Length: 219
Image 1 (tube, rainbow, N blue to C red):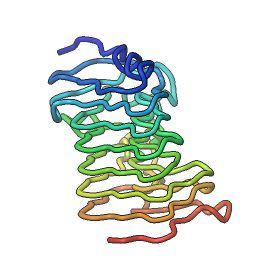
Image 2: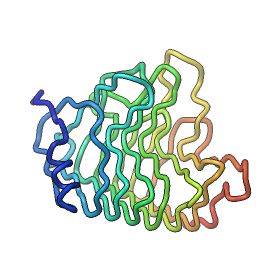
Image 3: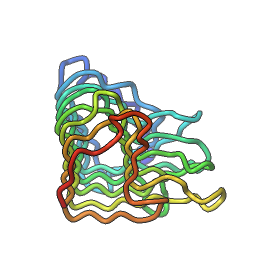
């Protein structure tokens, strides 16, 4: 416990063209990790007791930022004791087939993913194809966001719980639980056994251009 996680092995996996980085049981403080650019990099814990504790130093810092194909996070908790700075737990951009399974963001021991302005994001997905989220539990101001002009062809969200929190110190949370940015398009969204709570709405997209919508749903 309390051993810093500096992401060095993630850098090695990225430079080596892929690999699995294991996080053992324990709580590991960390600042923002270096961007993961390679494909086939997986970050795997040992369950909810494997915890990365994010300590941001400025607004809009990202804990895990990936761009490669076949990126994955499994059996891991992402948490923060900070409730002031706006932050992002996971951002994934451009790479196909990202997978997130048995991932907890906030919600462990009251350590929720929040900030003073209700702007902290759990998952921020900016494309591309075949996004899979299974058994994810997110307690954040903005639990799940989709963006990017390239859009996302297929999203599967299954057996999950998403809670859009108000931090209690500021105005009411004006963000929905699932948010689709105005320049984004989701071709097909499959939802099965999912609970959505809090926020201004369950699902909302800002149609500032004609791509800002969801093609079809399946529940």
